[in-house]
Every structure is written in C-alpha cells, then in structure tokens.
Length: 296
Image 1 (tube, rainbow, N blue to C red):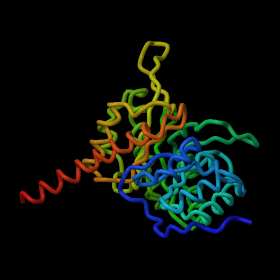
Image 2: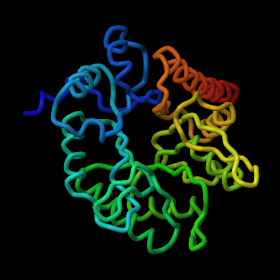
Image 3: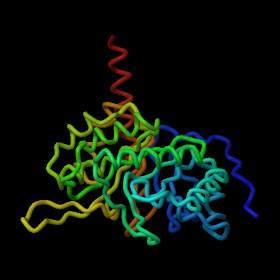
C-alpha cells in the first residue's frame, strides 16, 4: 500500500530557483530546512512502491513544491509508448502532486531494449506526427499538461526539413504542451552546430516556457579540433550559460529555474550557491522592471 499523500497544500512552483534532489542531501535538507524554491526529481528514480527513497521524498514534499522530470518516456521513439511506464508515472503524480511535469524531446527505446541515453530526433514531418501523437497520449493519460525540453545535440540529420525551433513550435501548436527551456542545452547545441545561441533564445516560442534548466558541461574537441561540448551535468554552470540565462530572463521574466547537477554531486552548500545565483539574476531583472515602471 502506498503511503499517505503529501500534506503540503501548495502544488505550484514559485518563480524561484530550485535544485535536483539527490540522496546525498536528504539529511541536510530535512535538518536545516533551507530556503529554496522547489526540488525536482527524475521520475524513474521513484517508480518503486516504497523504501527509503519514498520516505525521504515524502518528508521533503511535506515542506517544498516538487517538479517531476522524466527521462524514460521516449517521446521521439518510432514505436508505441510504454503503457506500463506511463501508468507508473501517473501513480507517482497522484502520489506527490507535482507542480510541473516534463520530458525530453528525444528517444531511448528500441524493440525491447532501453538505451541509457537521450538520442536526437530528426526534424521531419513523420517525426512531428509521431512526437505529437505521443505527447497527446501522455497528456490525456496523465490528465495534465507536460513540458517538453529542447535537446542537447551534437549533429544534425540530413533529412530534417524543420529547424529545431520551428519543429518545437509546431509541436506546441498541435498539442498544447508547455516548454522547458534548457539554457545549457541551447549553449551546447549552438556551439556544436555553430548556431548563434542568443538568436536561438530570441526566436524560441518563449510564451510557452514554464521552466528553465541550467547545468554544467564538459569541454572537448572534435576530430577537426573544433569545440565539442558534452552535456554531463557534472560541473558548475558555465559563465557563458549564466549570460545566456540572464538574456532569457530579460525576455520572459522570472521563471522556475532548476540547477541540474547529476554527476560528481557537490556539497549542499555548493549546489545551493548555484541556485542563489540564479535567484539573484531573476531578482535583478525584477528590480530593473520596477525601476523602469517607476520612471514612467
């Protein structure tokens, strides 16, 4: 039998910074009750029925808003969605009432195998139909809107007939889903494919963005000695990503913003400091807007 549902009544995610919840930080969070906007968890890590992960998550959910971020629905796969996986996600949502639910524009399943990666989708008419059908099924099953995250990419498909932004915008138009803008992914894809990252943000369907992600990456070079960025989530947010985030906030205003740090997880103090920096950038934008309003 599942534990009693959460007691904290506010399911909304504040327009503040949050962090990914990691087992290394459970005890610190419960002992110190830090000031943080929200916590986000990978849904697949909590699809079991009980045990310590749920005990800690329930205790933290009693005090903080929660966002669920999926990595296993395989929205872009050329096959049917896993109905059992979707059912487990629905149970998790019923149990914890997250304020936001998100998934990746990617695929990770083939035949009966689950691939431990988020693989890119070609931006074609055929892929568009498949992705929109899958998102429609997810939202109908869950009974709520999901957010779709832009991918970190390393190459482009020759058969693509849409730009990435046009593809995502058309998915939103057809399904009514929301968007999760991963600013780190924008920087990675723009560097790897020689796009202008600021133009990408300017052209993005920002009116549908409901959450932002920030993370670190690993710097490498390709066979031609060109920069190659790898989305590893194991370092602090890069200064260039902070600049791109500040630009995005100028356009959309404060937004629930997550610090993702999934590998080589740092101390709570270091992770919290990253969230505080994101909050500072958002507060600076609010102060600037207030100053402009007062001058009118």
